[in-house]
Image 1 (cartoon, rainbow, N blue to C red):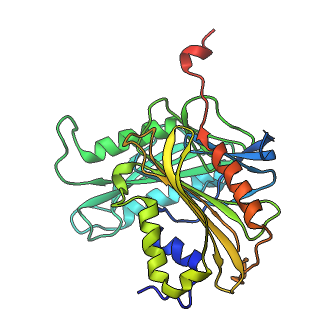
Image 2 (cartoon, helix red, strand yellow):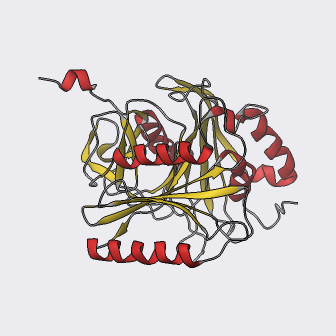
Image 3 (cartoon, rainbow, N blue to C red):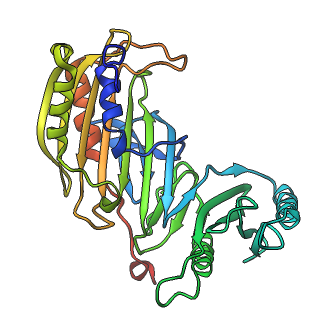
Length: 353
C-alpha cells in the first residue's frame, strides 16, 4: 500500500498514474532550434508522428519506442567490421547451443542484404511456445536493433505461419529504416525514434514515451506518451481519478494547491488537465501538471498524456527547490502543451516532378 507520509504528492500522483505511462531508459534526437511566438527560441522534438516545442537547449533524458509491436533498442555506434564480426559470432553461438526438441536455439537466420540480419531463435533450451525475432541494420556507422516475437500457435486465416509473418514484417521495417540527425525533422510520413526514422505512409501500431529536461531548470522535465487506446483505456476520466488521489491524501491534501483543473483541447485532441503545486519528498515546493486524452480509438488519434514536473530530484536523488513560480510554470505549461501537434508531411504524389 502506498505510504503518503513518506512520499510527496507529486511522486504519489505519478505512481497512481503509472498504469497510463510507459517506462524505460530514454533518449531521442531533437530538431534544430527555431522560433515559437510564445516560447521564443525553441528546440523541436520529433517523436513518432508528432512534434513538441520546448525552450531552446532542452535535452531528452530518455525514451521508449514500440513500432508495429516491435521494440526499438537504443542505436549503437559501430564500425562495419565490428558489425560483421559480431553477427558471425552470434550465429555461431545460436547454432551451437542445443534445444530440447530442435537441433539448436537457432530456427532461422535471414540476410536481406550485406548490412541486415534477421534471427529467429529460442530464448532458452526449454522454451517452445514463443520464438524471439531480432532484426539488425547497420548504416552510417550505427547499428539498429529491433525485437519482436512469434508465437507457435496456429496462425489466423491467410497467414502461413506466425513466424513467417513476423519475419516478413521485420524485413519490411528494416528496409524502411534510416538514420536521423538531430536537426532532421522528416517531411515524409513515418515514425521518428531515437536516431532513426521508419518511412511509412500507413500508421502501424505505434507507441512512444519520452522525457525532456527543460533548459535552465534542472528540477523540471516534460514527459510525452502516446499509445493505442485499446491497450490502456481508463475506467474514468483524469479529473475523477485525481479527486480520488486527493481523498487518499487526507489531511495532507491541505498542502496541495490546485492551480487549475478542467477540460482542455489541444489542437484536435479533446482532453482534461489537472495542475497542482505541492511539496516534494524534501518538503520543497514543486509542480505536477498533467493533461491527457483517451483519443478516438484510431491510430492517428491515440491516447495521449503530457506532463510537466518541477521540484524533481537531482542526479544524486536529492530533492530540489523549483526555480519557477506558479505563474511561470503555468506559462511554460501552456506554451509547451499548445505546441504539441501532428508532424506536417508531404505525400509521395506531391514530391513527384
